[in-house]
Image (cartoon, rainbow, N blue to C red; front, side, top):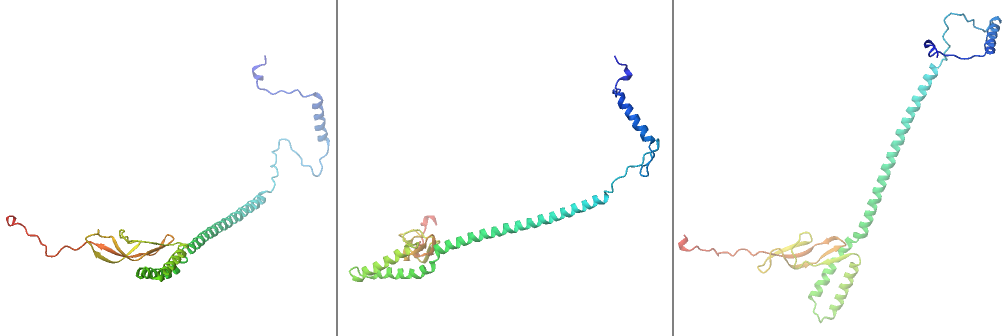
Length: 232
């Protein structure tokens, strides 16, 4: 069993030939005269500091180049971000323009003839008046009626349609009250007469119906009631 003091000691078996070769190399080195480039080594003298490569300037240059590269990278990134934002805004503006143009085309397609229709509606009104005043046995009545129907059918193909308000409740959104007539036979706010028919162009009201509306009759004058003498 090994002794306690040898515990942890390092041992190695070195061949005797290797030791002899090392001693011979040292003796040969010591016997060789020092050359002009050799640095004498003094045993026991403090060792001189090892020469350190002059890398401070190179490190400073690399740091400056890195900072310059980073600055250029930030500028390039800012330019790319600004260009990206500008292109996004341009794309959004173009998309909004397309939507507005499509909406305007739809408006023109659906309501572009509104002015023309407004000019033709009085023609329909006059034809209706002529039919209302003509005698049934008049040979011109059928011609006027045919003309009126052809005109109404032509307007209908472009989305023009009429509506009647007679007998309905008065609606200020689609009716225009020309006058009111007191009537005890009708509830207030009913359309009694229709002077002009109303018209739509697709879903847009282009002319309200001109109507006469019923109103409640005024209270009778001079009908004051007298209380019985016993209650006076």
